[in-house]
Image (tube, rainbow, N blue to C red; front, side, top):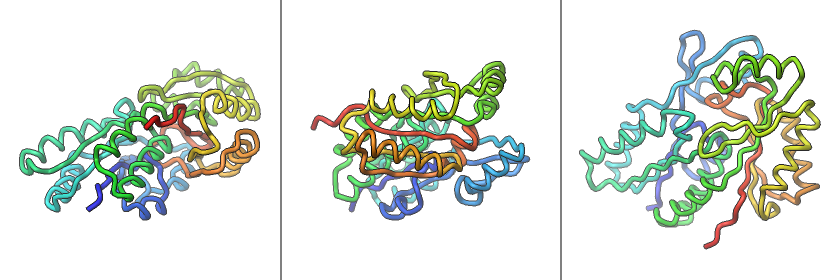
Length: 287
């Protein structure tokens, strides 16, 4: 029996990919007006972004320990080898809950073969790691082989992104109030990265077209063998811009293979509508 890949909804993979590779996805929670919703189950990204544009300020909550216990127990009873790949522990408490529940489940099922891995990644950068693991599991690779590749992908996955309005990052505690105000006033668009699981601003650019140009330049500077990579593009309800990035990657960098998805509710609650993110590897596997 193939290794079972488990993850959470912050990976932003499409339903087609999830079903194709039989990935178990646990939803994070979105909180709006004191009501709780499950990411991409009874709260869809398109609805969330519409509400945010109307002034709503959603909050999010991690996957509960109880949900981990439920899912881990199910596969322990089936004697199924499992790998849980989690949303960066620097951005959510979800991974820490998985560690706690793994230890608890092993007390009752000591022979349960499960590993939990902190991706130190988010959105579709995280999703590309899960996607690769699921492909390998589907091809009958061992837990050791999968984890080795997951580790490489996690350490070398670039997240280059920009947001349309700094106010959303301010609400989530990612930038200061002054930065958000001045950015909005001057039409400054930040370019950000995720390094070791943390959100890091790397440049500030004035004007949307200049941001697009600069993000493609950064991809060219940092990427390796891009023409043979599966590249990710995620967007906050802005498919038109995502397609512009795709066209530039094809014409300037020779990229042929893409996954394009909407940023889900868990991440989108903090990044907001209009976010554009690109994901690619900065080092090839050497084995």
